Length: 145
Length: 391
Image 1 (cartoon, one colour):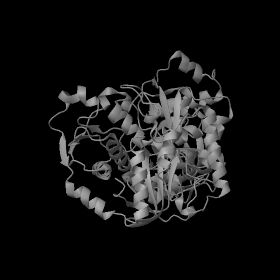
Image 2 (cartoon, chains in turn blue, orange; image 1 turned 180 degrees about the vertical axis):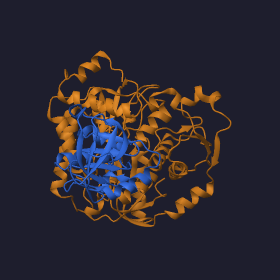
Image 3 (cartoon, chains in turn green, red; image 1 turned 30 degrees about the horizontal axis):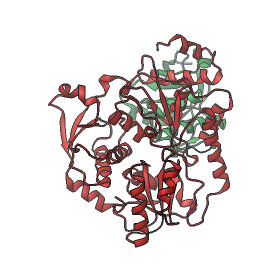
Image 4 (cartoon, chains in turn purple, brown; image 1 turned 60 degrees about the vertical axis):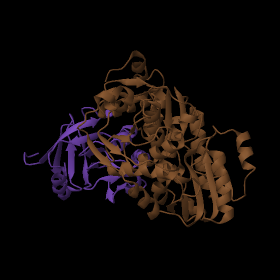
């Protein structure tokens, strides 16, 4: 790919053992508002705040509200509608526990202006993006690999 | 993270697949929270067991865990479940919900849960400095603030996994130097249970993300008022600890270490009175007492008062549910039950707050609990008001 791809620095928070050193690619699902997992997740449909997340690389601010929310991430996975990876701007325990019990890789954005970044990324919703094998970078590729 | 030999064996699958998955989840979660190692716990308390809260997702998670041979490694209690076996004026919950709730209870029993209550400290009182993995905010606050035990405010699923391995990540409340106040709040002297509950609730609203040092709570205040205050605080705040002058054991060795420069705020008597007035109950479908579960001490008086309130029509209500746990003996229940009225029901091991009461025709509830007042509109699907005449 050309060097003009948009790159976002990441820090891996949780990598299931079978995904270590593996590049993770999928369409990007961008959620710009904090997510109350209990309430905002429609597990059977694979939606978070109305955004399709199944098989995608989700980027969202962070989770808020009831700790029961962790079960909703598990439900997405259980129904076969789970995301390939979740990227948050701030680590929270509800999302972290959800990712860990569902074996979904979790990353945190390294950036000083999260809101601006999410606003910018909104334009790339449904574009293909990859998380590098070392978990240090999100590379937005465009419409196809 | 540092792991002991036994923990490494768990990690390597020598205790089975479920234990391996549990320790890996707890360690990864702990690493996120900055823990350096795991700490052995003596008692786990699991929350998130109402079918209305956790739905099919939670049910399948708990059943998946219980399916194999893994069992809780330490003494474990669980929160009360939804009151699906209770009727309101003869109306019952649908069979599907009842069956699913029973499956959750069965799985937890199979794993080794010994009691279903939000007051696990009445089933097994922890000791000073004991490490716990408790979910359920009022219990966490009681353990840290009244007993001087050490527990973070765990979430439902993670407490279940910690129970399986008998360990919790060593961070936050497990570390003595994190159990310190961030600010000082002066409160007026409460004159009854409801005022104590509201004081706790309003402290949490002042500052939901910091640990308060509360001054002004009189010596010799009934323990049940302290429980009400902590439960109220837990509903409006994220904190696992409220340091209460004259009550919290941690303060004994902290006293000289509290800097005089800490920020100070005050709650005024009128703040409490206004809040109560704004939420005052006049009429409701249902009265609820027992959030948190009533202690054996308070139960007889509350039953007597409930019967008198319902009969006198002082507050117009169709039923009154009084909630407690198995730590109240059947003989005592019989004794207080004799005072009863068919409209006054004494229920054990359930929680109406996590029960979709609107599904059995309840639209409004009056309660003496600030915590129930806070959660019932969202979780129980009812309008909620504050009831002062039971106390």
